[in-house]
Every structure is written in C-alpha cells, then in structure tokens.
Length: 534
Image (cartoon, rainbow, N blue to C red; front, top):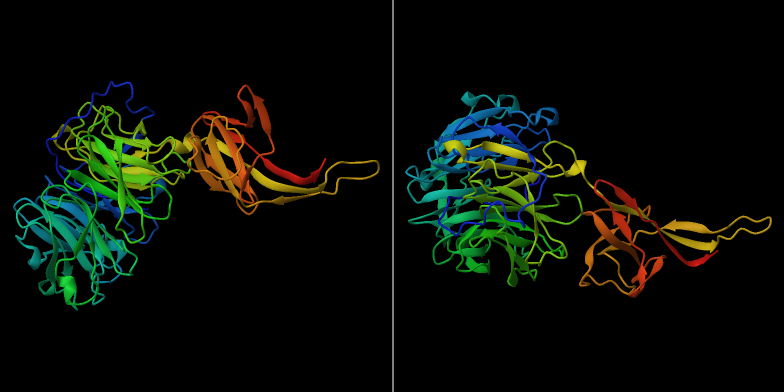
C-alpha cells in the first residue's frame, strides 16, 4: 500500500469553516465507512507497512487517551470490511505516533512510539521474528530509549539511515519546551538501547510532519518538516551535510513555504506532473497550500492557495492520489472541529492544479466524526481504486477509532477510450482489386480538452480548455477517465495536434467532440489519414 500523506497533531483555536448547508459544499456520494478497531480511546494516527510479507499493508496506531500502541494485520481482501486482527504491542501513555522500523535488521519490523504529555519518551516495541507470532502480545517486548526521556514532548518518528553506519537510525521531532528535530544514532548493537545517541539538528516549535527525502539530489537523505508554532513555523527542509561530525550539529535550514504561518500535516507529491516533488500542507484560515517546487535543488518554491472553506471542519491532514480514476492527482483532506460538518472529503481540480478553487466531494458526510488525523491512501479492498485510511479520536468521547473509507469510484468510472492508428496506402477498392493500405498503431500523446476547441497546431498545456495528456500504448490504445461532460480528444503526431474530424459551428470550424456520460465509456478512434487514399 503506497503511502502518499503525512502528519498528526492536536486541535487549535482557529476560524471555523462554514456550515454544512452551503450550496458549494462537498457533493456526494459519501463513502462507506468500515471500522478496523474501536476498542480503546483516542486513536491518533496511522502508519502502514507490510510486516508479515503477504503484500498487504498493515497498520501501527497509537491510542492517546487509551495509552496503548496497537498493530493491525490486513485480514485479506475478502475480510477487509470487518474488524482487523490486532495486537497490543505496548503500554504507551499519551502516545502521539507509532511507526514501523526494523531497528535490529532481523526482518521483523519493530514499532517506535512517540509519547508526549507527562511520559515524554520514545519507546521501542521489539517484534517477534516469526510472523506467526505477530498477534501474540506476549511475544512483543517494550523498552524506553534512554536518550529520549524528558527531552521534550515527542510527536513523530521514522526510520532513516543517516550516517551509513550500523543499522537504521531514527529521525524524530517534538513540541513545547526544548522541542527539536534530530536523529538517534544507532550503535553497533541496536538492541543496546543505552548505546543510542541523540543529535538535535534544528530547533522546533510543534512538529506536525517529518519526511525523509533526498531533496537536492546529492545522494544524501534530508529531512522535510512542517512546524506549527514558534520562530521557525512553516514548511522547510534540513540539508544533510554528509557523513562526519557535521551530522551531529545543526543542519542548514531551507524554507519551502508558509513561513510564519500556522501549518498542520504535510504531504509530498508531484502534483503538477513536472517531475519534481511538491509539498502540500493543511493550513489555518481554511486553506490547503500547494507549495510548488520549481527547481531540482529544492531552493525555489512558489505557494498557491487552495480554498477549503466549504462546509467542512478545519484542515488537518492531506494526501495526494488519483481518487476518481481520471488520471489526475486529487487531494484527500481530513479536518478537525468538524461536528455537524464534513470531516473527510476530497478535492478535484478542474483545469490545472494551481487553481485556487477546487471542486469538493464528500467522503465521511456530516453525521459522525469530529477530529480526524493523518491519511494513508491505498487499495485496501483490491477493486482497483484508492481507499482512504485514517482515524478519528473524539466522536462520542472515545472516537470512531481506526477506520477506512471505501472509494466508490470503481463502480462509477467513466471516460474516453480508443486507439490511434496511421493509415497508409490505397484504401479505395476498385474493379477486381482490394484495398492495399496498412494500419499501424501509434504510441503517441493524446491531448484532452474541455468542450469544443478550434483547431491549432502544436501542444499547449496552458490552453484555457486543456485538461490533461495521456499516452497511447504500443498497440495505439489509450484510456482516460473523465468526469461527465463534452470533450475534444486529439493526437499529437510529429509535434502537431491531429484529429481527422472537424465540424462546423457558428463560431467557425472546431474539432469533433465526444460526450462522456456518467458510468459509461465513450470510444474515440483517431486515424491519421494524411498518407492514405480513399
């Protein structure tokens, strides 16, 4: 299961979003909600990894009010809508985050829990090596990482190889007094927890996300964070200086965007399909910020604001994925302060991802759910679309628990499909002769525009009606999912746009169009007849 989202945190006093009856609020259908576990209180975050080697994503979750860290094993797609097999791997008061990390490299992913509140420590839960023992709580052992105790209120951790020595290290960050981002250096024997050493690399206020990434492409993994409060609040990345003494000192800080703004959880994804990984972050003022990366070095970024004030709670976490199967990335959004509002929804851009106004769609509806957390997207039920995994910690004082929302798009996909071929030779039958032309599939780009379009020559992704471009396969076949509507579909052949169908309109000639109806696939076959005779 591919994880493409980030972040967890607590509620803040910020402007509330509008009421659920707004005419421009999220449209249906709502997604079916399936409960993985609701046995404790205050489920606070989900992280995913395949811990038993069956190819399916398993889950680690901390229950903040319940004081537990639990692991859930994917039960297989036939049973995925029921409660999942689970095990309590440790007692973790005020746990804020739980992540899978194979600390001792024995092939069995362990769990690292971050605790805030009075516990203020990072705890390690050693996993049993035999996958058959994963659901036996007695086979898990828990210990505290001594270097972590009472340094700060810990918020997040991931496994990350920092210095190239020994086993995997751990990057972590926290909030409040003494908060920092840093890394725990693994000793030669990872099981010797007293041998781990903490190296702070940046001050922090309230860390909401941490992502390991090689931002500048120098072969060293850097650290990307969203920081909610303090002098360094905003989204930034910390440059790994490379192996040596400098790694134990503060790393160079580079802001991505939202400097000085209150930000929540952040996701990293290439939203504009330019080959550079961008950042998106939930922010105060009912906004999602698209921090568009403009260079390979990670030094130049541009902020685009996406409005999120349409009958939902306050933005909490984001994730990016194609949620309706149209080939374009969408944004999944969870919120807090959502009583009577939409708590989970997804957003779709109409023309380009830099648009300020995106179209909202319902996921959770308004009946249940108050305070949601970070998101993981993945095809949990194996039907070919991305489902949404999250947790909710406040409904009915206990919370809905660990839940997933079933994406209905596999049952309602529609769009355009067809083939691009080149016709060459004589296709006109004559007396005693058969047509002798050839038909050759073309693996070329196929451009999609909204509505009727007057013919023009070269590709133009900035055209006001441009929707997307896909590529036909070796057999010339293409398929593109689209919302219902009227579209123009043309092939790019030899650097020029081509369609062998032009119609007359009151405004002059226009390429032929195709209508996409809900739940139906329309066919468009594009034939290059420039070297054919009829």
